[in-house]
Image 1: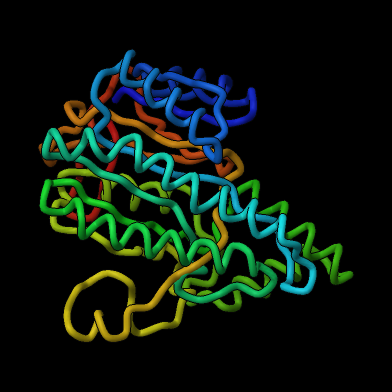
Image 2 (image 1 turned 135 degrees about the horizontal axis):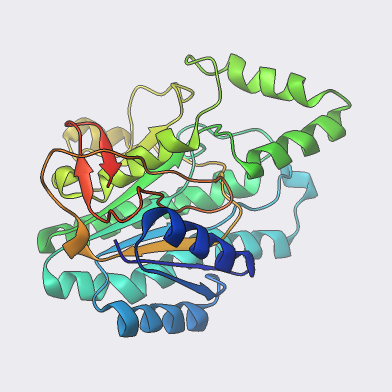
Length: 305
């Protein structure tokens, strides 16, 4: 696949080289702040100039700082809205019109399991990410008739660099060990452990593939069973319309980054192998050398080859 990623840090260049080395595909990297509409427009324009039409966009920005309500300032709230809500809006504005015109597209927002079950100490993330769910659901209704599917994916406690940093901060604040913090997290998860980035990435790959052609407007939790609600954001039945729930949460990634893929590289055929990985600091596909097509080993086993 052709992939473009952006981040505020110069580390995006290292990430691009790592992706290209592992996948053998063409990777474009750029420095951009997704909270800035002008920078997003320039980035997406550069991607179009180099790769042509954009068929898949994954919006992924880091989460606001961990705070309780009494500790927040007005500036914190404005920054949180810019980081999580406005960044998604900027990306949608730049990519969805082209997808609609061509009659095919995928837009995936990475939010958090907090949209289903608020997480203590993350008042900014819990609140702002709920707005992203409302945005995505509305966009799904507006763009679905044109073959453009818009969804959320909601990671739970996933073993990433960002989660390790959060664990260290909480341990220091409470005067306990980091192991105790992790024990508290895993005690809430029926699966009994933290998630692996590969597990999250596999779900993301499926949602942006041809195989997910009838999934639109959902918020898919990849959380090991952490969220306890009976209803989930998604279906438009009478019950869902009456009791639609929101899901807010911790984004387990450090970089403000997006994936922009070319649809023509998404192969529909079932055989294949490989994996889709994420290093925890930003999202990226990693595939076998010289292989560039998305395939599936089975109905629920997306892989990249």
